[in-house]
Image (cartoon, rainbow, N blue to C red; front, side, top):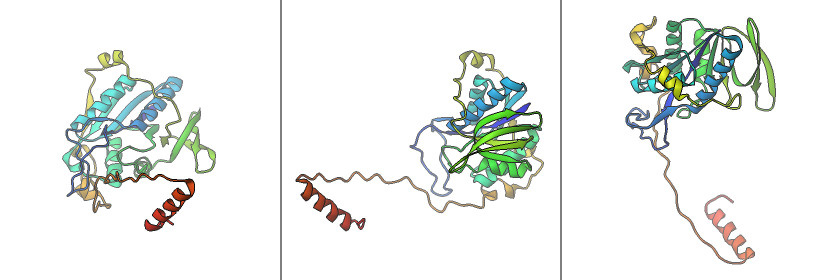
Length: 262
């Protein structure tokens, strides 16, 4: 089976500055890590390969330093990886990101299953996976909790719905976004790190795409624009009250009324 996992490098801290003009995160000089939700997608791919055999590839979009997460994926047991990187892709929203990665996937070849984490910790939209599937013209299922059965032409999965757990069968090729409860991700292996230190990370740029319409990529291809983004202001105001339960109840009611909460 040919499996592709979409991964992303995200900030490793909540103290990230924002470019006031573009509304995007300033990632230069910020400690980064692999998106935690993507670890579950990688582990799912490894479990599938253990059962039916095949090859696992990963793809990520970002600046050159994003190749670090591909190296980490190699340490977990992934076979090959590609970095989608070009200045033309900068500032992409979820729609432009989805289209860009879908173009890269077409360049990489055909896959039976594409796996994504539920969402990323820097965007939290949970939209890129399903939008990619739409661009690729393949069926998809989100919020997958369990791989029930791998069949010759399809896979049976459990998906987490708001009030129920539903069983669904989907034909290959398909895209699945997995929940964090699906498997416990394994740790990267130092032995694999040594074995894969010289393994190639393929580079894919704008010039490699079939569709070279610049209006579909980066800020130019992003229909959603951030009007204003700013860090929340910390409010450390506090009051200390003493008194009987009746006195404190009265003070609390008065304070809530002043704040228009009651």
